[in-house]
Image (cartoon, rainbow, N blue to C red; front, top):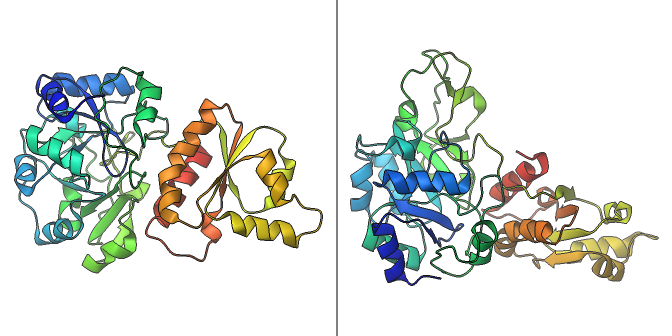
Length: 356
């Protein structure tokens, strides 16, 4: 483990350090250091066409990498920064192509984590994709980083992440046409008429963003393509490659009776165990709540959406460490309760189920 002074020294000397944020742990390097950025891609086994998110501690730092903001972008930043929101903005020319995957835009956010902000104030902007091997569940505590990169890997320990899900990623209307690389197909894009496009849902919800204008989710039909028209050019991390999934099979759990059919070792993540217990008591011959507890590794969030978000990736990682064959996740789509995390959680779980 590193102290903050050691982390600063290592980063300034061209090293890579795992750092805490409120969303997930990030693998950080100075935004201007090409060799360190290439080391991140190597360590993560990350494809080079997957852009990185830059983390800043102030609007002054933002101005070093982004062109001037529009009124809409500034209003959204003033509302949600620091916080779990990434904006895709027109980049300045000095930003390395390795950071943006050759795009004319750069993804930026200001984390809501005091230790991370302190670090950024001392180092300047840092790139920091999730501190995991590409394709594995994102790390929400230092032990997850150590599982992927070894016990001696340099980590600035900030405790468990308070949110546990990657940030919401958006762009604003005036920036939509700037998410291109050179040599793109001229007629490959369907321009959006919405004020805000969500590329990846997170803790900042569609409802919250709708206060600032019309909102839509990004779809494949909006993707630009290379000059041959065959390769999609995607402006945000998390759109192109497999993410979030454990090795174990992930399933929605909508009925307790599904568990009666499973003989292999399984872990069950529940938003609220009482719902399944009530169901068990109401159906004659079904599995009892006592049998449920004895037969499965139960993770009960006791109705807390925040806890559910914090434990999702941890549950995935426990499943792989313990060699469970199944991860059952209570079907939150059926819940009548509302939460700003619901869309993001549904997105991550469905991606894990599909293996995307």
